[in-house]
Amino acid sequence: MIQELSIINSTPKIRRPLKQGRFGNPLLSRKQVERCVELLAESISNYYCSMANGGDDVVFLTVMHGGKTFSSDLAPLCASQPAPSLKDPGYRSWYASYRVVDRYIDIKSYDGQIRGEPVVMASDLTRENLAGKRVLLIDDICETGNTIVETIQFIRKLCRYSQQDIDRLVRTVTFLWKPECPSQSLRPDWYGYRTSMHFLSGYGMDSKDGSCRQLPAIFIDDNRQSMVKKPSWAFRFDQSETGSPINRSQKPR
Ligand SMILES: O=P(O)(O)OC[C@H]1O[C@H](OP(=O)(O)OP(=O)(O)O)[C@H](O)[C@@H]1O
Ligand code: HPA
Image 1: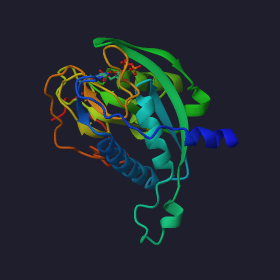
Image 2 (image 1 turned 90 degrees about the vertical axis):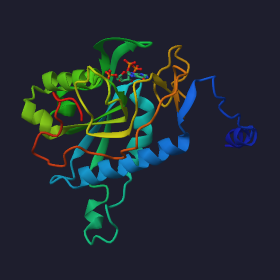
Image 3 (image 1 turned 90 degrees about the horizontal axis):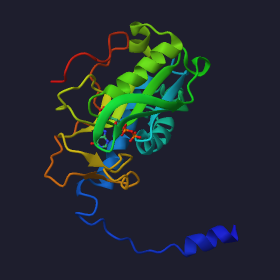
């Protein structure tokens, strides 16, 4: 206890500002990231609260290592979301009407900026802990979508799911989405921001030299001017529960 206090007291108060150029140009501040995660959490929670079997577990499946930072911000907010509206007389039954269960899958698709085939390195998923449960796949960024598609394939094989099972049970959220990627195979159900085709780092995303993953904000790694398109916070493409949630084969508009 005393030791803890002494650690707190000795924490230096000086905060060095992030210098432009050192990590690339700043793209999204910590404040923007935090606000966006809050909005995503609200939308995701509303969605799972509105499910007919709202009391079920929802497996928050983090795609490691990139998705770790976003997931650890998102999951506690989702688990503690209040009702969609506190004026709603039924809000007590909506509150925490689903339970978040943490699982992970470690998939590697990139070596620095060189794109390769996604390979599953490790996972704590088993048929027993996954079959029949709703799954929210969480990752930092969707570029080609191959990582997410590979994860979905992994789930499909493990649980012997049909496409209808996948459509019913699996949803995806990435903090960033690059809709302009020419070889894109998927768009996430939810995303925080759309970005253009620049290599980004920070907030879980690895940089060329592997030094920026832990940064709390997002940077452009290639030092060129980039743009963040008008934010589409907490956007879902299709709210229907039974219909196909994602048009996985089509390129986004
Ligand atoms: O949509 P895609 O084109 O598949 O790209 C997105 C994936 O690429 C990165 O992972 P990476 O393979 O670099 O591994 P990491 O998560 O360990 O950084 C990122 O974290 C996503 O998982
Ligand atoms: O822009 C990116 N940055 C880091 N990792 C990535 N994986 C796909 N795109 C990116």
